[in-house]
Image (cartoon, rainbow, N blue to C red; front, side, top):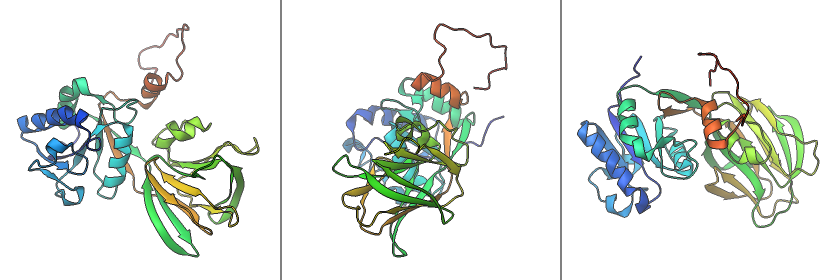
Length: 305
């Protein structure tokens, strides 16, 4: 059954790079042809489109915007997710980057894929996000949203840090490691995966704690209920050159006594083509679970992936 049809489209590009200009113009032409209103994110538009009559800051977008088309790679998609989370605008991505795990519509077929989505035929997927704050002596120093992860790590040198982590105000573990990744299920296929964390389906309400190169091999990744508040406390005597990084894009230099507090934030609605399946995406992008020369008989309807 067709989903609700979109009326006003926001467009976010790959930060001011001219190599996505042609793709953005193709999206604009499609919207003009279908008489669909649109607004451009002036901050990310290539120079030739910054003076477009519908180019403006996201804060000036009209309330009628009910879908954002993100043109770029997964990094652009993460930026868009953080920017639009409070507006609760769904995102759909056109891949103009490398992996294209989140931004999954190929540029070659964007007119066909977007037209189908605009008609109401698509897959809607809920992604959990994180609200990350830095507190010191009970005073909030900074706040962020994270779609993938929040990472606590050394800034300039590959040296270990000391952290004590609490959940629901109860002591969980002392980590002595190169860093700690606090990730969403979306982030489970990013940095957390490289650090040995598990792959978690995006719809699961969970938060991952993944130590980076821990001093003891007994410190393994942990999957927690997303509703749990996580508090990571720096060792006051070993805080120098420690940094908090959000989605690999935002940085905060931590000070003595700083604590990183992570809570569940709003859900992010991600739109995919109607045929999208998470397990299939894993096989396509990561070659995950590929049987190689072994073939298995799959009866029709037996594979929900």
